[in-house]
Image (tube, rainbow over all chains, first blue to last red; front, top):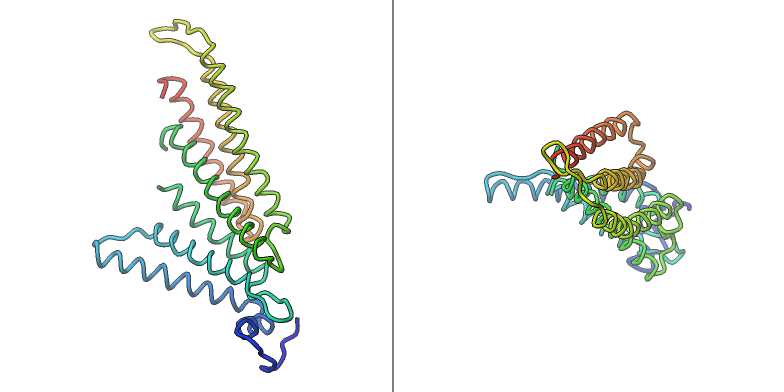
Length: 108
Length: 142
């Protein structure tokens, strides 16, 4: 996998996969940010509406959302067949989210 | 600590959830002809197969233990009725909980590189909880 110039982008998939070819961990950082934003938003929305919030639940819900986004990412590939989210990155996301989902379900 | 039924119920439910998540990922990737499917990864493949067989075996174990339990003749103990099959039931389901935990913890342990001491601490806590919960089942019947 070589980081090429920002050319020969024929489709949206090519554009989405482009950062992966240059920076392997790009989508791990993106998914991590999405996870943090969703969990914090849910937490503070719940706190504002009900008065108290459950951090484990919000982390569990955002874990499922992040996992599904990463799964969709593994299905998107460019014209060379390179997936948007690489297997190793998806494994990290899976392992990380399973911990929160596990704690959430165990607590329930 | 919680009762034995709660601990076993939570672990069985957690095992089913992990199985469902892995099943969803593997099925979606296979249906969409993913370039790097998760099913090709050795650790995930092994975990998926082991959890499937362990949860599958729970049905058989439950049936055999129920048959043992229903065929046992109750004996009178000191101020109570003694049923020895409850001990084998407890042992079997205690082993199922440990089996499930071992397979589920493998994914974060290996991939994220979780420290072994943290896992040891959780296992110690789990062991004590199960032993105390089983003792309550043996002693008071629930």
